[in-house]
Length: 444
Image 1 (tube, rainbow, N blue to C red):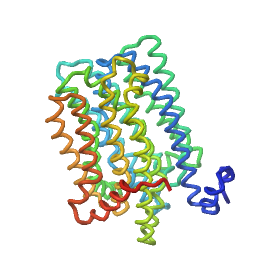
Image 2 (cartoon, one colour):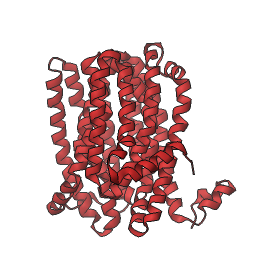
Image 3 (tube, rainbow, N blue to C red):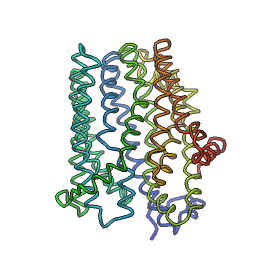
Image 4 (cartoon, helix red, strand yellow):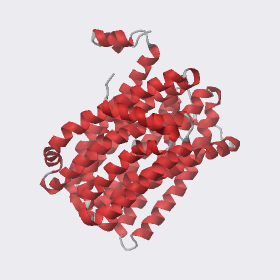
């Protein structure tokens, strides 16, 4: 049976999707995820800009430093299990309660450990900065609440993301209202850190509710320590890879905070915020198509690679569609969003928006590595990208500040997503596929 929205498509598109129920299900799921991200993009950008204008570059830089520290260590809390869990539930649906229960237990343990490590590292790096220490300690609770995102993986495996959208958007909207109130009453910067943790706490409650409304119960989940050992054995390269990935995703802001000033970091963070608005696009698409790509590998290798090439083509096209106009409009966008105080963020935004093209392709390429269970290859590729980013930041940040950090991100993202594929023979085919996508991107 066709989804209701199919009837409203133009004739040429309707012919492509009519009767293709799996494709319709994927498109419906992707639509919900896009709706979620569009709402967050609109409301989140508006509220975020208001907060940045209110706090000013220096305090906004401090808040961004705390968020970057937490982002790096949150990779430990997540344990890199997302794709593994979806893959295992697709393959063994009869074991889904044991899989989810085990992963939830592991993530709760890992998140508490990550929280302690984050606070300890901040004390080490900024022993005399009491405000940064408090911001990290308050905002770090988001990692613990985030453990309940494990429930989201069940909905992903069923391609039913609309329920997750309900739960997380409700939490997001409540937290956004709180943030607006904080600006109006001129609250201190610590209050905004607390609002971030509040959002994750409300999202955890919402996920438990929608999981129950779909006939599932948290109390029915089981923990298997045998399965836990197997999952940890499979995921440790992903944990390392996720930590390394978050290092090279956020090391620029941490190093700016350490080697430059909080003001410079605030300027740079405003450019990052605009560039990262679009990160939801590859994530939403890949989370919807990943189960079908896994199934294609099981039955038809040619179709498996055909679907991967289409995914690469699409994400390259979307990356260009965003990067090209932003290149010419960066100054206007920064001025309209953040005002004159943040004007120097424009050239940083240009470099960062082009790094998004390669970030898109990295997300798609990682789908291939996960489907092949090449987790160690993913670890090596991510490590090389992180090493390049750290080296370039050490070289350029002291000389060029935020511009140097943005340039380092662009080069290291390209290397980790595309250039590095040609260093490893089994990935050269993938490198060629990515090259074709960059040269001849297509929407369909």
